[in-house]
Length: 99
Length: 99
DNA sequence: TGTATATTTCGATAATTCTAAAAATATAGT
DNA sequence: ACTATATTTTTAGAATTATCGAAATATACA
Image 1 (tube, each protein chain N blue to C red):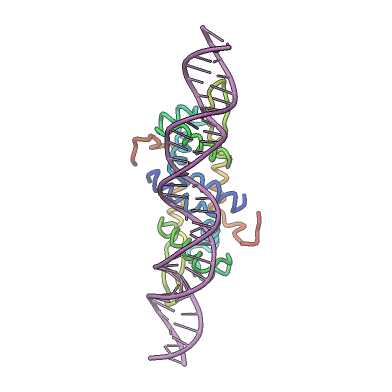
Image 2 (cartoon, rainbow over the protein chains, first blue to last red):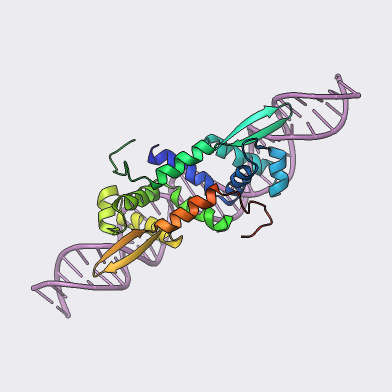
């Protein structure tokens, strides 16, 4: 993973509402949670919540699966793990390296 | 660590220049690197670099130690580790929990 | 078709952050 | 005191992001 992509993921996690969404999904686990359930848990206006969820989706930290009217948000643990590994790694930190 | 503090740290890592600074410091290890050396590595104007470094310092991801005219920037691995643990943990994700 | 529920998109304002030149500060050597 | 090097602070405009009401869309069911 390159710096720029990792920075984007970190930036999305670096907002209190989005971090709260993500951590709630980490807690509920692989089955994920409906948008509405997240909204109840966090008490945020729907339009605001939708905005933040779509940003998390945009960097792959969350996937969404629709089941009739309900949209489930599912945390992507593999993406998180990759990000953490990247943060700790000492490889490819040279400015010229584009890996 | 509470959500708000973790979000701040993640936000600081979520910027391409700051992430590059931090990753460079992870690479050089515990002895750290002078501001000037980081500047050469990343090719960023001094005032811009200083601004980003001070943000990383403000959340504890970096410490600075002066040796005469040279300011060394030292990565705080323990702070990074704590942040990573927090991200993966399933504890205290309830909105009401302030831990 | 009409109504209800679930969620997103639009749009506009407010707030924050980024960038970098210029000026200031800190330390050391002459 | 003067000069050089290392780094920060100030400042201001540009760019991005956050918030949320209102309107729109998607699905299901009567």
